[in-house]
Length: 266
Image (cartoon, rainbow, N blue to C red; front, side, top):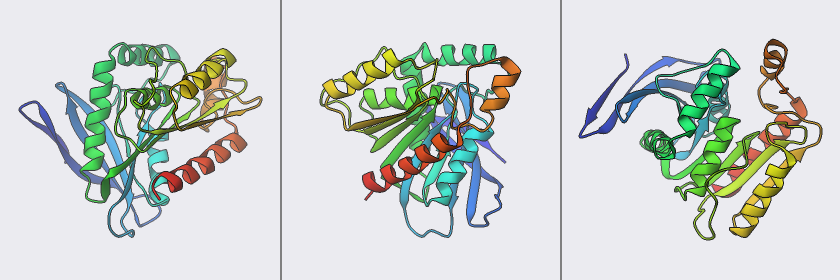
């Protein structure tokens, strides 16, 4: 059973255990939370064989919306000893089945940065309140649209230990300012990504450098957009999109992210 209550406009999250993955120690919960009167769906994953509090990681979905890919990433993080929440940036668990609808959802969400920040912050509070989480040790990682989201949350100075962008847009109407970015920033991009061109990459590097951000960027030569998602090849065939999964880039980026978390949460 799931549900949402609000008191004085503040969301109260009611959760229910709905599934247990193949690894018995990994537990998952689907949760619902309210942001400005709209219901959002989240997916929490953690390892109940790990004792005590641990860092929490927010997982922000691609432009398709909250779905199996972001949930799988949350479970992978749980297997590494983190508690992860795959959040919902669109509301009502929206998930597109066509690029035109995905673009519509993304543009709607991106048009209101205050609302986007409220959605992120509410999900972050849900993660911090989980019994297994150290509320002072929170990071965020995002894919495609989600990569842009976590970078923007860092630019806005949110209290995060670190953020990781996987094939996310590196340009933004928000510009990082010196001394304002608290999070360490890591970005992985494809050298052949038509959605994140070289000019955008160089602009991001200059922005991070000028704002004195703890950042690193890795570009994989010849790799296309959505290289982390095994379904990207199917999207390329079905919709004639310039995207593609790359196993080497995906594994390298994942391993680098785990080393990054080991460092910031040490």
